[in-house]
Image: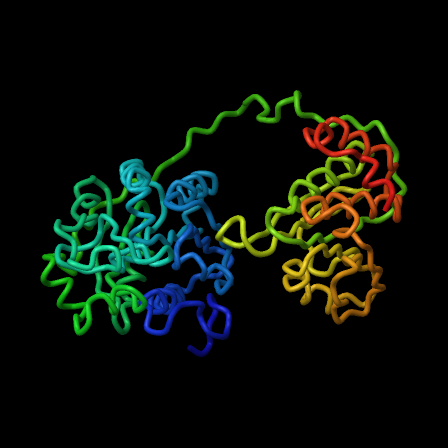
Length: 422
């Protein structure tokens, strides 16, 4: 698609023939027809094949837990309370099955958002298991003889709630007008897009056409409800108690040596304590009187592959927690190296601390090899790296990190001296 304003260029991250591609492309067309600004659109997704499109949208995006996208979007809509902003929820039939109560509640309360149900009639990301949206007779890898019951009709359920706009379309060709009409509704709207999964649905039902499935299931493609929407209005309170619990306030007890902020990226493997080590570094920085942000990143399938964290330490207020090019890059495993190569390549200055067992990435930064894994083992390599960094750079008093470690649960399991000898 040319002249895209809401989707970045390049291939969409779906299997060939997946209906999710059509939904994303038609969403682009619909928003252009409406004259929307990408920065006035908030896309909310959750776990599922549909959710991996986040990185392709040039709008604001929010990725949540499986089945919870509508709940998250409801909170965003209420907080924004702005009719000029458009909150769009992408959810699969699996996520809709899990979070059906959130959809019903959002419709009943009249949150200003649109739910786009990607109904390919099965759980596509986890192997093709049936959902409550799997039609009778439709086969999946775990139901080779076909579903024995009728599917859930979400359009009929939601259209029974007053003040909603509900429709169903077949996800073939150009259905952008239907999406545009649905997006334009003030209040709650839902559009169910019928599609088939090429990896599991098509292979399990050879020769079966999407229109045939929809017609045989009695799922009419029409507008089910077009009533005057009521838009949820939050009750504003002028005076509210702080949500910050003073119990968790961090007291500055140590000093620091920073005059400018330092951006640190840590990259290792899942299960090797990267996030915990980054948390400890961040807390130590706070006890030294620094402003700190910390972000974690890891694959949707938790527990495998890379684990990365970004920590910013600054003597001044941090207005943006993004980290495009790190000042310091710490790499403790091959997974971390594979993940961080793009960041390393962007570095023309700064320092990379990399485990001695790994090949140095292409970079303009100074590279220092340290035997983290050899000295302390894989599980403690990330923790060892922050001790090494703190001693090497002295951004803040080393005692700050030792103090945080001493109050952690790890101190009862690990002798701190193994980190001090690096």
